Length: 375
Image (cartoon, rainbow, N blue to C red):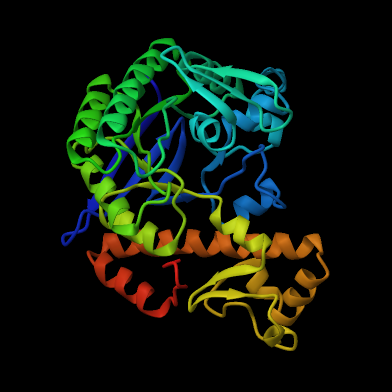
């Protein structure tokens, strides 16, 4: 039996937010949890020590990108991702499906799998559910994902229905060839914005008895209310005793709304990507550190934050680093944004434990100034 298990510790009395623990092969992960993204076996500009210092417990790496560079066989020879990147915490790998459908050109989707061109050199590639599992088993992540079709939004009901059924067939094929007892495997719920399709997909995946379940097909251009409906339609039919993972979501309001609906796990490149462009998440909302108003601002970035960046450096210095394109700036800003979201879920866990998550959410959103897109 796999040493991977989710335990619900407490559910808030006034919503579906839940406090839990994941036993990831002997490593304890408290949920809800936000997971930094280390696409190429590294969270950009950060060391494994930095990741630990900000309180991260799980990081995500990318199957598609690591398959191309340095190659999953190379990682396997190194002893797996943990040894390759010198990180002893839990690692999750996605299936590569999102990258195949968003980055690659000239895709041809067939029942066997997907033929497409590499985004690096245009070479012809083929990936199937079995190939995705093979790559992830070679990578040796703690948690692997089923290969699915990430469809565009909006799509017609008939297209979504056909795609969802294909995703279910692919999920079963991946499950049949997955053999690592030291690696959990999650199924991915698809079905677009259609409740009946989400229900059918979630019920079918639950019957397959995956180790956990991901909610896919969100953050692909839909409005916020549609995304929240997708979450509701999926979670309603997923097991209570398995973890639920909302893929690719990292905005403050989306994380809080996901937790309220019963989501346990989140990941996104958003915090580190916007940090490298000078945009910071703070307790008062987003700011852009490259603005002239910060050139002689000798106050901390966010007085409410306990990260290395906020404890030791001023806005003026961060402004200087950014304007001079210094790597230290990207490192410090990335540390802050990741710590901000990890602190956000830490606060959520405490609030759930005390049956006050809805109050916590209201307090955060009241003080956080969102931009015109709602981020």
